[in-house]
Length: 171
Image 1 (cartoon, rainbow, N blue to C red):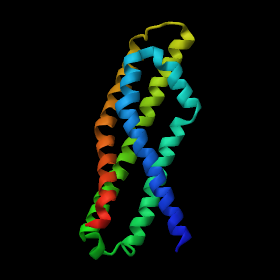
Image 2 (cartoon, rainbow, N blue to C red):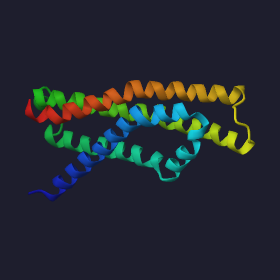
Image 3 (cartoon, rainbow, N blue to C red):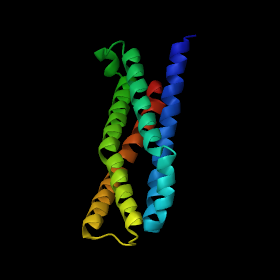
């Protein structure tokens, strides 16, 4: 029994479950609901921000990727090509690359989009106006397009990574 390996596995699987679960809820529930509610969703979004959602999911994603890289290094014997090109190695390589791409995509698309949407909604709340001016609407539209792009790219990548990790050891 290797306690460090067990701890690493708990961190990897636990953070991956949180990341994937957040992606499912965000993609299929939060995004469509907040879009349907429009400005009325702002108090809910503000509450999520105060509770640390903007830190929770990037942290879970980073822990997943970093612990996964440690497993990859260990399992590959220090990046031995024979392991990497084996069926299991190819599955873990493809899944790891998908997870890393999703992590980077999330950092580039999701975080800034959420920040831009929140900033405009807060500006509207402070001004007392219910509708955004042309500049604010342009910022909201751009943030919405980036968030939709993130959903189309990141969720399939995370799902692919989860599936390859689930079966990789058995190939």
